[in-house]
Image (tube, rainbow, N blue to C red; front, side, top):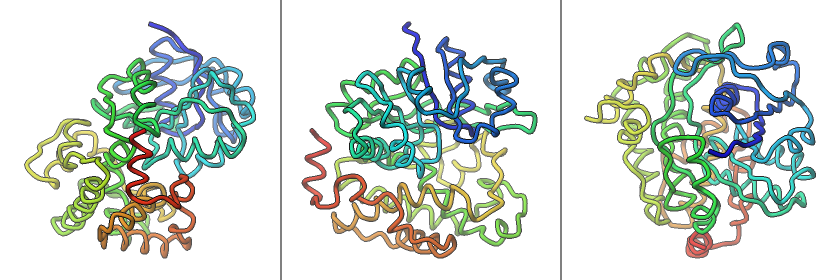
Length: 357
């Protein structure tokens, strides 16, 4: 097996779990944190302590807040941050990118690798492979600084912006994670995302609890049969748009089963029988990625793709409008628009042809 010098942009849950996992495989890992104070304990320890399904101490090669140092130390760079930060990260990383780098957006939402590619291009970086996948780990940072890895998804998809690049570069990810498969296209990968269907809807249904900072189990206590009616309609809208772009997706209950294993009799049963979900608490603030990231980076471009395909999306529209109102921000303007992806002037057919290339 080849071992790589890997950089990770991020200092949160996913970045810690990803770093520990990659070090466990024998790779050299440099961690970039914009705010170095957030990882002071890692600097003192020299690495990451992991508990749960991944256990041990995993030393890091370097911890830095300098993009230039990250790039110099890395052949492959994972972006394990909020996807709303991709454009800014690409702008600051671009001066240090060379033609032999590979970038992997980790939990990229809808068309994240394309947003990174466009942002790097605008900033003058050379053309490089960019491969996206979903976040693989169910994990939470602990008060003592360790990362509790509750589990890993046993199945997921990967994609590059175009199908030809997916075939050429995508298999690299199988060196790091088991159970990854090529998506039919970039939209198939981005829409095969249970969180994008569920997070915002469940959060809005529990807005009173969240606003009062009550503690509750997000997937177990946060659901009712009526909540699931909204989720099922949201899922149906995902399927309708996906089918218009040659990206037919699996039912969400089956995706959950492939991720973690669960009872697939119906969506409510599936969500409340995922073993790891019993530990997942709800947000304690309306300023949370469930109400921002999933909407800005999946629902906004999905709504615009739906408009091109003349598909009605009343639940997606409502969630975008409600989330914008609650957050005091126009997510349709600030989110990941088709213009940001370079598709603003394209027709549905032209987007499909571009993806197929």
